[in-house]
Length: 247
Ligand code: ADP
Ligand code: MG
Image 1 (spheres, rainbow, N blue to C red):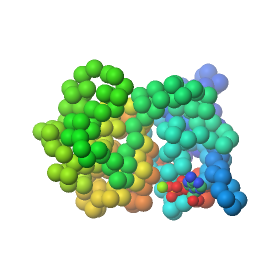
Image 2 (image 1 turned 30 degrees about the vertical axis):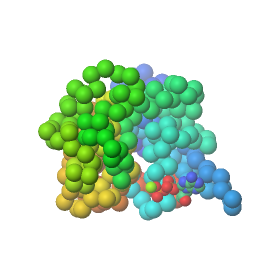
Image 3 (image 1 turned 135 degrees about the vertical axis):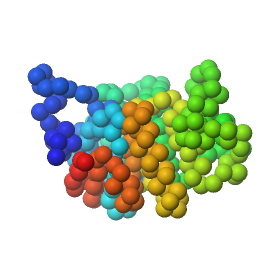
């Protein structure tokens, strides 16, 4: 196993000036996450360290409740560690003010959901371009059209979500997640609502996009096919990394 993916600090960290150093797009450093509940607090992540480089396709596997969604939420700066740090493109998410966080989430990270989360009252174009419109960026329609080509949905921009198959809806979700050309794509069980064949096409699409666009992708999954396609498989158990397998 490459030390870079190991649980601890590797010799190729920045203070080793003789080694080639590539800053990871995502770095979790000894991350712990506790949720407070009415009963005892729940430790959802317990000392997790992980680096993800640009363009890497990472599968996060493990039983329900092992901490996959928690890890993705921290990686996307939707939530913050109880201790340890999460660095997104070199910046600690816990150090940012609200306005900087909004910009970071918007521009560096794309989210893909199990249930697609499309707005039913908007067309495909409308759904894909919405994040750009909200950010006040120009040429939203043009960018949306380009993203729809990436996910092989050109020509379907004027349809509404109810006129699409599940696989097509997830492609729209992926196009929307890519609208800001983020460096990091986070996907929580992206094939969980799809049949196996359609799910596998989505996985292949995600892997191709990771390669072609150099977008790091971290995907929580129950699917063995997903784990088989990944560059790196991270196995979580009870909030801890059990092993990291790199192909
Ligand atoms: P996974 O996605 O692998 O199923 P989660 O990250 O959702 O796991 O959950 C990890 C642990 O944290 C579980 O024990 C879960 O019950 C708990 N948990 C998750 N979110 C919350 C929350 N908001 N409040 C309290 N406990 C939570
Ligand atoms: Mg989950």
